[in-house]
Length: 155
Image (cartoon, rainbow, N blue to C red):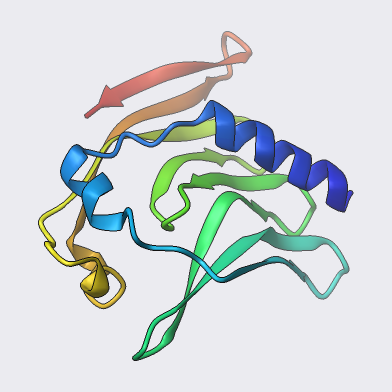
C-alpha cells in the first residue's frame, strides 16, 4: 500500500503542474526542504482518517512543515471524502470533495499562484500573502437522471 501510494504521488506530481507566476517562481527558487515523511491517521474504528506526505523546511526561527503532493481524507466508513494535491511549497493545486456516497461534490483547480513577497525568507512567516486563484466546479447528483452533473462553474 505504501509503495502504491508513493507511485501515485509520482504520477500525480508529474501530471499536475503548478501555475506559478514568474514572480512566485523567483521567490521560491531557493527554498529547499530538508526531509519528508508519510503520515497516516486512523479513526477509533480502525479506518484510515487521513494520509499524505509532509515536507519539512528548517528556517532559523522555526521548523516548518507543508503538505506535499497527494493528501487523502476519509469518512469514518472508509469512503474518500477529500482528495487534495499540493505543490512542493504546500500550496493547494487541486481539491476534489466527495459525498458519503462517493459522488463528486466540488472540484477546485489552482489557475494561478502568485505572491507579492520579495524575500523568500519571509515565505513561511507571511504565507497568507500567497495568492491563489481557483477555478471551481460544483456538482450535484440528479436523482431523476441517476448521475452526477455540473451544477455551477466559477473562477
